[in-house]
View (cartoon, rainbow, N blue to C red):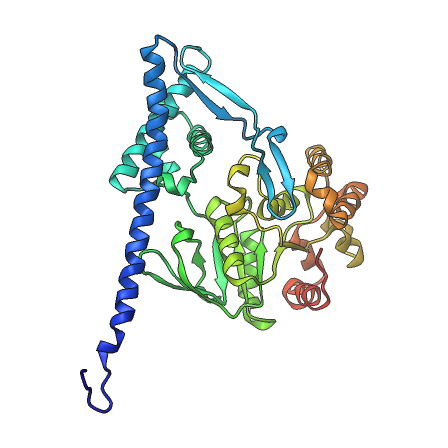
Length: 387
């Protein structure tokens, strides 16, 4: 047995800790290899089916899920919008003039993905588009095909080595370590960009009492200027700067799974703001096949509620009339399956529809310049003004 002098550390006592660390690293590497094998096999199976069809003198066909069809979606309060097991599909035929170009583009992107998986390299959808802009035509074409492939293979985009471009920001009482070892401290004076590999973050540390999702970057920055994260109670603030990207949604879910603290949303009192809140809470139709990794049904609507407009006596000149497009979107949302289990949401939507008016969060400045951080949010959080 080794002895150490008084005041010295007996490093031999940490042998078991080193062994445990090595074991964890080995497990991570094995999991990565298995993930690679699954992705490679899935792509190879698609190509094998194509080769088999050609060998039989048949035109190859790819079968894609109708991701945007509400008929393929079911609502579960504990998950949100998720794809049913007996979903409808559509055929992408290689011998049909209308669908042949898409068939070719799918094979092209499958080839790019296969090479990245084999070489352990990564790219964003934007990288793929700019690798051949003439071929793909537009970024939306690449975006849709990548999602179709992910759904077809039943493999998350990250496992296909496709990274999402991040636009979201995070601030407040939170620190964590990124996959490459970078330590991030999200103080209000040092806003951090949402990491591109949310699954890889570890050592999440926070004393936050709640998380506030803010729709707009301008509101997010104003709350930072008012030092909202520290004045009322330690909290974490996140913004997706409008419709959230995949990484921002993944981070909200990661923080929920890790911290289990209340999550609130601060959105404009308009159909677009409600839509964005629903994406965070219940997910979207087009990404329903990944609902279990993206949705947080425990999210609550803190504001701006349509009923707050009258309750706070916000001036009429600070309000905006609903456009015909707004009214159509609102009517469509009122028919969605999750509204049936949210009677308070339904009531708020009815108030908006009846008034035919909407309001941005900035409308609160008509009451006072710092009303949002000084009065509105503190009173809402103190007296449970969420639904």
